[in-house]
View: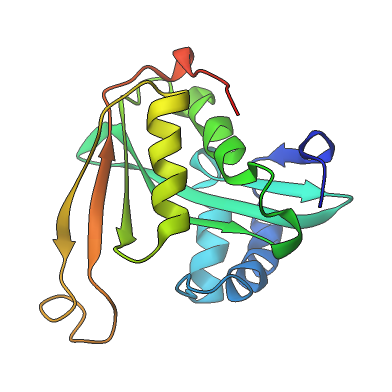
Length: 173
């Protein structure tokens, strides 16, 4: 297992797109987007995304963006952690890194979608809400398996954390 203190957090760059693509591929049940999508995440959304490197290798990535109609809301698109970096709190650290950035200074809410059976993601965001943001977490149905995914993907719950103040993030593990 890696030591969290040895991991370097940085904003991603366009050149990281293919490494992100390969990382997401290695992290089922994450949906694999096109490599073009990952290139856009690493360039257009770099201020609200983060990469985690250990000894020069990508071991984690979180993609997010500010919702255009609600710039006080950060939407987290995907959280990917390489197998060798799991269990050390890396996903939580990456989310905190994003929230502490100037681009997120006005953020009061965090949203994401999670399938009902993805217990790792539910645990991550519950802990983020209670331990780090001291904020309420609400969830409800949003994307339906039949209506939105034509039966090709499990339903997604919309999870919303907030309100909170990123400058007051409580760093507890």
